[in-house]
Length: 445
Image 1 (tube, rainbow, N blue to C red):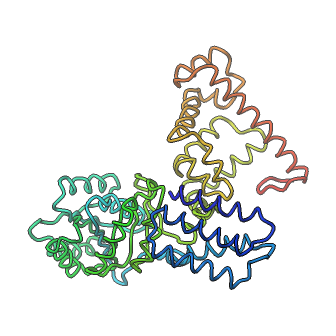
Image 2: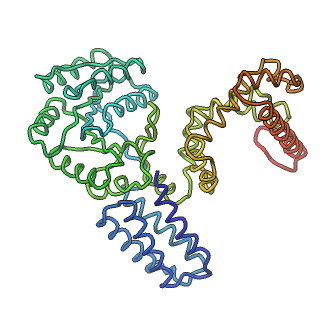
């Protein structure tokens, strides 16, 4: 996400940092480039005008002109302005009722991703120890109820249904019964509707009156551009919105709606969809998103993903075996499995400061993931004994592994050579650590 904007801004600041001092002409050029980059990213022009005015005013006020660190100060000023535009520093948490259940109502246009978001949100809350109940209240879209029931079955969560002729009343009844059933969160998937359809909006207002939700979240397709922003403003005029959910963020290279919508509506973005998978949803952190846009990475989100998917004790044990040249194909296979759970390799690299350019050098599309899949297939085609001892891999065994993994003997040989070189390098690093010339956690001297 934000690839186009990030590339433009990164290039602008690289030129600025290549100059010994920042003159007023340099500042004007940088501000002009920022303005063009934001407009090309489809950010609302009023929001762009306010942001660039803020950046220029702060830059002049903080005396960055002719300063040795002027370029770095300009980057920080732009970062702070982006954070402010996105809604502040940290994430805005979801509301929690003093007396359960907490009721979360999802609203939005048709096709914005409400049903999928309902499943993702239920999965997120379930991981936090909550006990969600899903309510299939989209009685107009064909198969919408079936879709939510399939998601509920996949997550092992109950799904309640309502009658088309009594949507508001039935939702109220379901919520009243949820607490007795031990459910502390009720997620209502409402039917999609156009904001200009007065009858449908009136029905939604009746649902709000009946459900009395603690959160009324507008689900917005990030690829909708300024139309999505206009629709959000219209929904806000009719409903007591408490937050926004931006979907399909991984599919929008420009990101204009994501950057505009908070500033235009005044409603905080609380969640964003990052993939089609059920775990592809995150809390919206304005400061982290600003860092990603400016090519600074997002190490905190990367750490959180690692904590969720990586077994810390096993990772430490693997690190020790790696540094002692006892790291086997079995260990490597386990690491590949954990990395795959954390997301696409390119996305993980972009979260590491300074690694964004390396991510762009990876093969386009899914090729990087397919290359990892081929390595995974090679290891999976080995016996346990072969995974533990590469010395067993003679010519006939390599032919068998190539046939079983759908690769060639040449690919097998190349992979074994790379693995041997990695073991040799890590043995040297481990030796330096034990000799006291290099300090690594978990490695005795």
